[in-house]
Image (tube, rainbow, N blue to C red; front, top):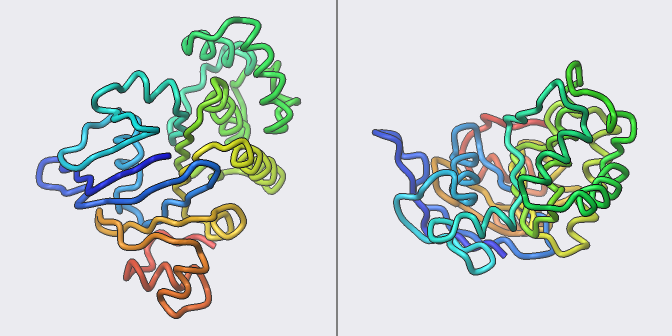
Length: 244
């Protein structure tokens, strides 16, 4: 479980986060919705300990990433918009490298690769070097790296960007499997179809503040608007950053 209370972060004169509070439960996929510049990526980086908050509290399975960042990172997977692929390595070699960084044995890495490859439909690229990979293939490799060490908490920053229909379906199946395994998943996205298809809970942030949390149906009920996208626009007061 991830708990955040009144988290704030300022960069110079810019208040990136001005008071975010929420709870994300195990065995659930929680959407993080907000317009561009609302503070979603800053929040995810604070959860991993990459950035330090100025104010507030964060607990990931009872651990504060400020107090014990290594313990948090052992139990967390973070998919960012920077994939960091090494083009001269095959997908398998790349995954072995990161598995070893996580302290996994070669045997454990091999077993986990055998699980992750069919989960993400990566059979066609597992032995290929990543040079020349499409955007969708690059995201699959980055997501496989994120899942390799069996994290119990997943932070995904727009994981479906650039994916075709079949890759998007593979991603959805993977996330549903992880939810069934009891993972706590937070997914920042602009795509309302993903939210309605996958997410039991939604956190809405705007101008660095959390403005609502609940199921898609609860947010619609709160605003009196039947369509989730329109309810979101009503909550944040802008149409910036919305994708169908």
